[in-house]
Length: 113
Length: 114
Image 1 (spheres, helix red, strand yellow):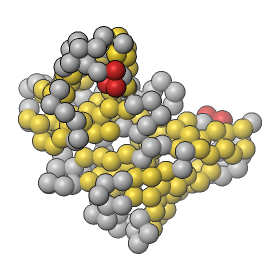
Image 2 (cartoon, each protein chain N blue to C red):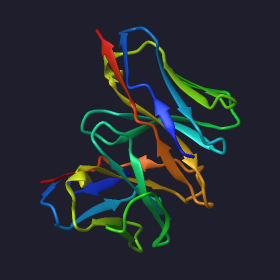
Image 3 (cartoon, each protein chain N blue to C red):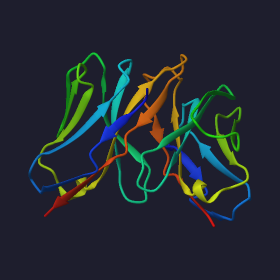
Image 4 (cartoon, rainbow over the protein chains, first blue to last red):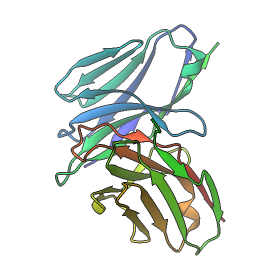
C-alpha cells in the first residue's frame, strides 16, 4: 500500500540541529523528496535522494535513507528562525508506469529564538 | 524564467456550484499534476496530464476533471462542489512522467466552499 508517515511537531532552539523523520511503506519507491511549505505558500523543493543512496548532503541539509527500515530523515544544521515551516517528505510511486507523488502529513518545525 | 503560476489565488463558491482552476507550468515543462491539500494535511494526488491526456489518477471522484492544452497549461474542474472540497489546490509541473523528474509547485489556489 501507499503510506507516508511523519511526526506532527518539532521544536528546536536556534542554532541547534533539527532532525525530521519519515517512514514509508512502498519498497519500490524510486526517489524520496523533502519539501518545505511556509504559511500561505506552495511547496518548495529542498532536496531529494535516489533510493540506491544512503546519504546526501546539501549545505545545511543532510538526508539519510535506511531502505531496509523504509526510514528517511532530514537533518538541518544550525537551524534558523527562517527554517520554521512545515516539512513534507514524499515518495514517487509507479503503479502503472507513470509516476505520482505520495506525500506525508507534514512536520511543523518551530524554531525558538 | 517564470515558475509555475496558478489562478485565481483565492476563490469562494457555494455548494453545488462548479469551479475551474488554472495552471501554467514552468517554462520547458510538459507535465502537470494536480493536488488537493486540506487544512493540516499533506497534498493528495488528484491526477496528472501529459500530452493532453490524463495519465494517472488518484482516489478522487469523477466530479474532478481536467484538461491540458497544447501549450501545456492545464485546468482543474470540480463539479457539484461539496463543503469538503474546501482546500488548497496545488499544481506541479515537471518534464516527463518518468518519476525521476522533479516536480515544481505553484503557490496554489485556495478554494472555500460555503
